[in-house]
Length: 143
Image 1 (tube, rainbow, N blue to C red):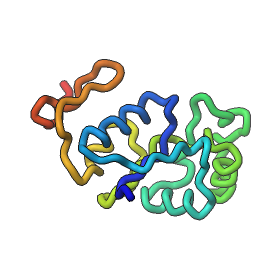
Image 2: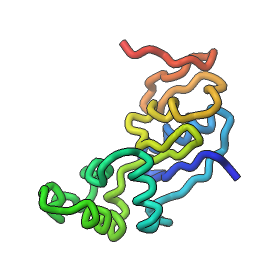
Image 3: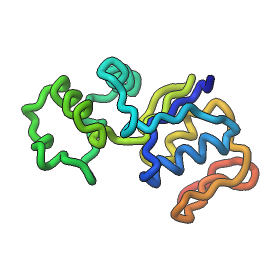
């Protein structure tokens, strides 16, 4: 069983880039398509705690019912926000990656590099053409 798990949405470019960087490190992660197999409450609460964030920080706004549900209101409790994410998993921002080095919402996609136990095995270019890793497996500095 893999020591790396990604909560993944294959329709999301950031999520696809993160999955590709995990694989570029030589690892084959456990891939959980969270829209098909949403986490239960205990798992979602555990992920939020491991990331050290508030539930509100995990809410995705773009392309979700966030506005229609009025989730921008400060009146919602953490438990209620989690309830919304459980009812509408599209509200869970992604990708979330769990490794022996920690748990993180990997936005931007390069955030995953700090979580990977093994270095990148070769060059990596994101889907949008941005080079992230050079041929020696080192990060390319952003200008």
